[in-house]
Length: 218
Image (cartoon, rainbow, N blue to C red):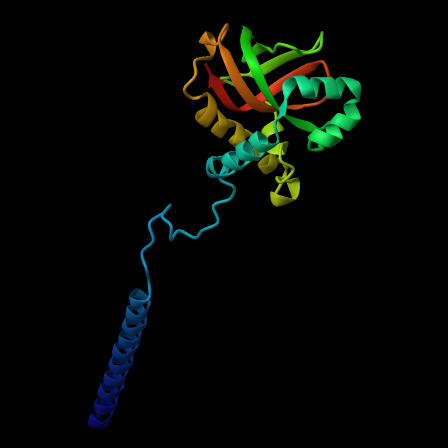
């Protein structure tokens, strides 16, 4: 009987020792994990989770590049108008960047803002060939992807899908609104002289819809 009691006591002691050893081992592992763990605030520079395409960040980074490129290549409006009327295809090839729906051309306009309709203002330039109408997007809504396509350096293959590609265009437009049109009141532009640098898609040689990258109101 005493032997059985001693055996049971020894067995219980062994079980307690194993449990204690197990708990100690777990504590050591958890301690090691804690020592090697860094707390990262969501959204901080150390947050390396996949965040996907960030339009606002993209627009802020890319618009200055687009603006600089367009300013560098901009062609005087009268020179460009005569060229596109003489030979639309040749002018598009010489001055523009090809897209699937027509070349995007950079242009420099010096003239006067005219009548405003919706998000556009007519723009009158002295010396233009008869019949050429120019309108400038003055917001608040800015439509199209002409700024995205203006340099030829932003391509579909750089994005995950068509939605991101469209969002890239909208993001650049939005950044342009802040940087270029943010200080202007579009309702008060009519009659004011200005120099506008921008781009338009060459579809109708006599009808230009210019998206600006720079507006200097006199």
